[in-house]
Amino acid sequence: QNYRESIVGVSSDEELADIEKFQNAYAAAARLVGVADEMFQSLINMLG
Image 1: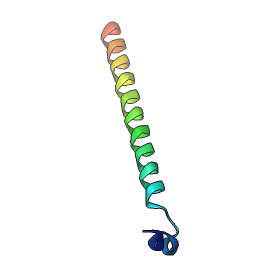
Image 2 (image 1 turned 135 degrees about the vertical axis):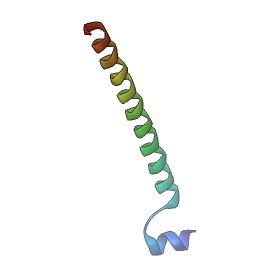
Image 3 (image 1 turned 180 degrees about the horizontal axis):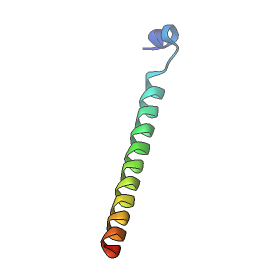
């Protein structure tokens, strides 16, 4: 593993940690979009 990292120049553990961060950020953004959609739908229903 260390030999591979020295050749490639990337730590697999760091890459895995970054992927987990990106997954969490994506999930949070998806929840935010869902909440915004519900808010707009409620507003449209109140006005319509």
